[in-house]
Length: 191
Length: 307
Image (tube, rainbow over all chains, first blue to last red):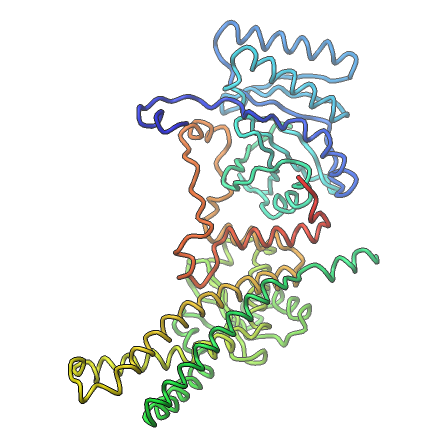
């Protein structure tokens, strides 16, 4: 948001970051798995704001169709869920992380081409540590950075210690959001 | 096994920090040497002042812990009263090969912890009830390890000695303004004393900034010591984030509700090297976190991997 926009009260919703770093996870997960025993759960979610316009619904339907049809080869399955924040989750399941990235990218790209890139919020990849505790990697489309999110027991609690550890572990390979105040949680992640 | 041992030896070393600390101490010393020279040049009266100040110095060294405890409203607690805190500190002392200090608790909601005492054998660590409620056990352990590192590094002794001449200088300033203040324009009376006051003022100002710098380096060193003691640098980072920004740095607000705000966000100005820093005794939390993060990388064996 530029100075002139602020001055004139023009408000735009930020679109996706110019530099797309989504694919960084498709190599970083190998290190996570082999060096730090953080294993992929074989599920990822794309979070976006559904729009009540006809073409938006059409794009989403088309994309579901595309993922389902390619899923017959790759084994990717898809489900859609609306959460209490009014956001829609497109949840992809596939044991192969690279297939998941390709699937998530296909959907987000279709939304961007359709002019709805500003409605894209985040992609979430679910991992777990050796004790089965979840470690989420959230890709913020507007920022183009990744950050870890580790929920802790208790209502809306997170383990910052674990998140910072994970950052130290994978920060060399996964471009991690440098501003800690933008590590927004996603409470009640459905994956 | 070999690998982990090798990593352990390099984990936690910071020659640069040690060098900056030494340099600051050297500068402090240099300022004081000049100061003593001027005092002697001004006459024997100054020597008396030094003796008076020495008495204060000893008082400060031997009674400061009791005074500080009293000021904080803290009370020493027995192992029966605070079994978890005692057990935590015992474990850390075992790890650090340190005699167990006295343990005190202050009844206040303000999250804080501190260590006092002139030597390893005569020390007290204190936590407030606020910090014990706010932090998880591993985070509290990081904070207590930080305080114990102050004890290990003999920070009370170091800072008391470092402030010795600064307090003399401030005393002379006070005396000077009280008794010599009327004689500024008087050539015959104030002639000998005026330069002493001016030099004292300079000594005070310079040593003040040097001491703040030294104090900041000691904080970094204590963070480092805590990370080495617990081998959990990120636990201390997490504790610092919680204490400093009431957790606002890593947000608790959901991304989905914050998204509307994001468009309005003006990127916060980076205050990495602002002038305000030289006035503070503690380094900014961002810098402390960044250093702890480097330690975590060393611990994880990922240091130096290119992004």
